[in-house]
Length: 171
Image (cartoon, rainbow, N blue to C red):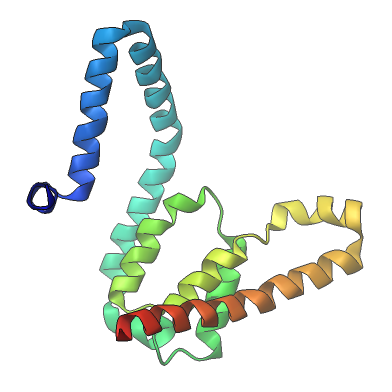
């Protein structure tokens, strides 16, 4: 079984399994399979434009940003400027988080630190459009303190993630 999984690949095996299950479902209960397919097409229509933007960003980043630039600003030698860049980028980023994974994976392959990836993902919890509503419910002081704590703990979280991941690589 492991040889088959290695030869086909886990991603392709998953896709093949889902397709087979849909075929079996269509044979057993056509209306349910049809409803599932229609829901999939509708979801794809909603996600496709955002995916297009992400892949366009990937394409542009591959053309414009080389590995040396990523390593210089977001790699092991990244100073406070690299941390600041990912904090701000995490706060202003929008859209579903899973659409950022391909771009972050590409940047990681080019040399971005895992700590900075964790900081980016953590700071996505700070949502600028929601700040006025939070201020209305909780007050300015609470929102400012909460935001500052979130940024501070994002950096702490980044250090912890990097320590754990480098510890696993050493084993």
